[in-house]
Amino acid sequence: MKTASRLDHSERVFLVGVGVKRGARGAGVPGGAAERESLSELQELAQSAGARVVGSRLQMRDSLDPATLIGRGMLAELKKESERRDADLIIVDRNLSPVQYRNLEREMDLPVIDRTQLILDIFARHAHSREGQLQVELAQLNYLLPRLAGSKRELSRLGGGIGTRGPGEQKLETDRRRIRDRVRKIGQSIETVRRQRALRRRARQAVPLGTVALVGYTNAGKSTLFNALTNADVLTSPKMFATLDPTIRSLRLGPRRRVLISDTVGFIRDLPPDLIAAFRATLEEVQEAALIVQVTDISNPTHAEQDAEVEKVLGTLGVADRPRLHVFNKIDRLSAEDLSVLRESLRAERDTAAHPRVLVSALARDGFEDLREQIELAMPMDPLVSRRLSVPLSNGRELAMLYACGRVLHSEVLDDHIQLEAELPQSLAVRLEAFTKHSEADQASA
Image (cartoon, rainbow, N blue to C red; front, side, top):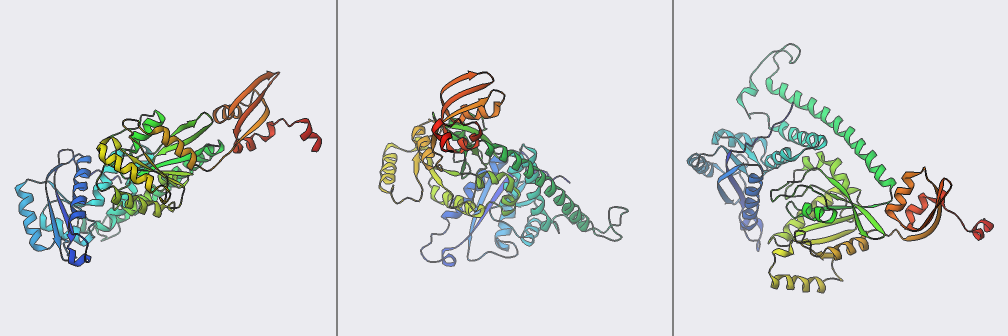
């Protein structure tokens, strides 16, 4: 059973936002600002899914209606306005309960989806690897399962089949059983992919290179930064979640050190828990990283709120206390005055900030020298040591690691061995201990 993307490129959508008034939220909390920002973000999400937004409506209520979310009066107004604008689909900027979902579809006489379903739709469009497609399908099915009842009238028809349904079993129960079977099979496939990823990760860890994970809110510029640092060609787009499948490249920090850096999926407010769970294998790249580089679009007026959402996801992944570097990206979009104020603020808070901070423009490739230096300083230490080694010429893997990760000062081929004097990371020196040539004094003391 394969879940399909619900949105068509030509679909006309009407957006609905719902918020709680100030009196119900607490004194001093401005009402409507966060909801308007969220509705604006929902419009970007819908456009990223290829839909055409024909209108939107924000309602502030004393409390949310448990039956319809928006109440009967607003429901009647939305029905008229959506008909007037010839909308094909209603998108609600909330996560709907199964009851609200059924009631809205019945009263509006139009398909209705919520924020989570829209995000899942975008992920389905952008998942290109087999692993990503499986993970999205799993999240879609888990979200669909409790919402089957009443979504279509024909699902409740009685039927009796041979081989597929028990006598008198409802089609609704058949659909549920098929979904559960598919969820189980997908789970097994994802576990297989997870084991394969773990094997590849262990192979990478056999080479003593530290790992760095780029994280941040969607559209913060992570992929542009990743491409600029590594000369990669990861897709960059102003659309949300343009990058879904993780990419890993080598990054040279200086003449003596390299690390592995990964570009991961962007986060967003109210990221569906099912999606986080489904993408466990992908997000393990973040969990295995020695250093997390958090990228922020400093030109976005709501960057503080976006960073708070990133913190929530990092906490969910259990890596909130991991060594971190905070990169403020897109400084090219700031005015000279705002940039000057920002630099002064960072200098004043340098000793009290939770994490080191760097200003860059990934597009203009500005601030990269400082960024590389800060990454090297923030990475766990792997000190350089000097060694004299004798490595058989047939040991190509060890020689490749030595030349890639160390600095060869002198080399000479003698018979079937190569004699080297090199500076190399201590972790690599331990791996190459069998090829180390000790001095006569060392041998005598041994």
